[in-house]
Length: 485
Ligand code: HEC
Image 1 (cartoon, protein in one colour):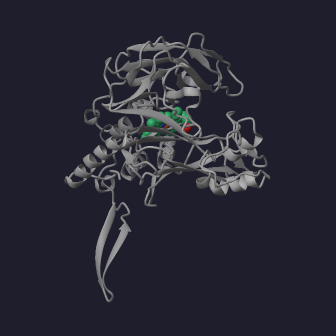
Image 2 (spheres, protein in one colour):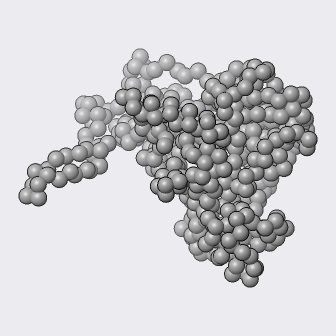
Image 3 (cartoon, rainbow, N blue to C red):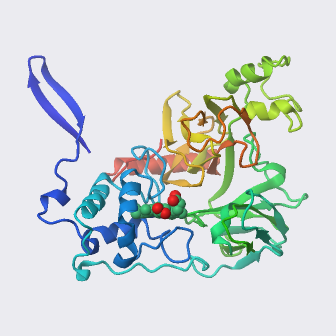
């Protein structure tokens, strides 16, 4: 909270803005210690139980007092250090859907409850238990279509992570729009994360969605990603993902052996909008990678650094990258994407001008063990810079999607700028060997640096309409925080 105080001093009136340190929180002004039933359970319901319940991949259930009591010491540490719930961004920037993070006051309540002996209090004070769908059930009701891996994969008890693929024909004979989609694995223990990609048939008329950002290659677009704490995507009314007739699904799981051999045959369930329905906005997922891409000029520093220094003669004033300059076979390619020298904190960027007006719906940073921080920034056409998300405490074992409460609306030409930091020093406790150079690659021990970003591209007319609507809302005396532009 910000307090603005007026000071009368010799220099006239000065405005002093100071961060208000939580004075005596309510918990302390009350005569008694907070209790589980009255004060703590509502917080656990709001921020923990979605994951900490029987059958999920979290180590223990936190549904009842009996469940919670043996864990209070661990809870105190994890909560006070903001390791739980996992939410690794600077909380002062932006507003998000389903934000489970704790306020300072929540943390204070939990800590003083534990310091005060963790009493249960009066069970009659407890809120009604939440109702959860089981981890192997559909969250939003019955899907219209369920597509399952035909063979699936056996994950051994021990061994390295692996990332296989299985292609399945979902039998979709006409273009359909997706209202919601969910993945259910059999082996909750061992799925680090998992994608379902949709490949349209070669003869389908599809927009080129690769857009030079390293996403959606070969007509293949991302339908959904499953990751701890994130298994179902529902699209706001009028917004959808599209699946073209004749498309094939490719399951692309990342498995992590966990002490016991298990077999996994994942299912993906889809609810469609009714046949014939046309949504206003179609959402596509883009992987904004650290790279040079075909936007030379914007990435000039990097091009000069990596390519020109390596002795390649290229004209940096060319508007687009010459074909073949950075094809995958070229060893320089992965170096332009990511080059992390030993004993260094490396910073990589990507500047990507939006080819059309757009609504930016979400951001999901993705790096591996060396990744420590990633930001998404918008550079407006007038040069103004705006941080949309700053994942200050990135942790690679969590793939968290940060969905904006109000999607950001930007005109064409706005530059989306991602920056990723990889800590290849001994300060990084996840770093097995700081004397190694690291580059881009899909193995766990290689690195990545991209933000998955869900975007709905707009026509100029849709943009103007959306802008007018938002400006009108801005004038209304409602909460206009975080409205763009
Ligand atoms: C998105 C899912 C998710 C949410 C939300 C979540 N947790 Fe966790 N939690 C996990 C998983 C998975 C682990 C095991 C991995 C780890 O230790 O990081 C874990 C680990 C823990 C541990 C460590 C247990 C041990 O073995 O020592 C504690 C304590 C904990 N969580 C408490 C909480 C509390 C309290 C909340 C809410 C304020 C919460 N968690 C919210 C998924 C979650």
